[in-house]
Length: 95
Image 1 (spheres, rainbow, N blue to C red):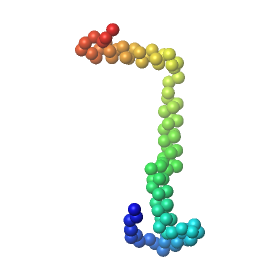
Image 2 (image 1 turned 135 degrees about the horizontal axis):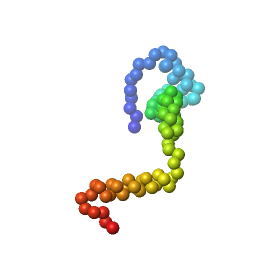
Image 3 (image 1 turned 30 degrees about the vertical axis):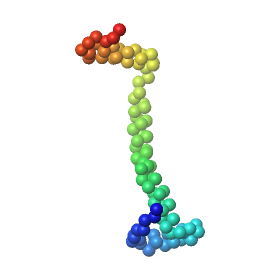
Image 4 (image 1 turned 90 degrees about the vertical axis):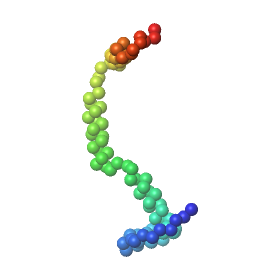
């Protein structure tokens, strides 16, 4: 289903749409539809500056990851789970 809209464009933008339509052999409406579709797809993407900043944050976090063996981490997790089970229930845990 199509919807007719009215927009005011500066002369240069209108000329670009016209030239693009001629070059592609298609309608001006199709040129605008495809341009809007591509623009909408990019809106949610990060800019280069945002991407670099977030990669820097990620690199900083990765460098802070402890380098202890997995077995040690597993023992710590098991100890935390035992402590939670022992101290946070009104009834004893099932055996």
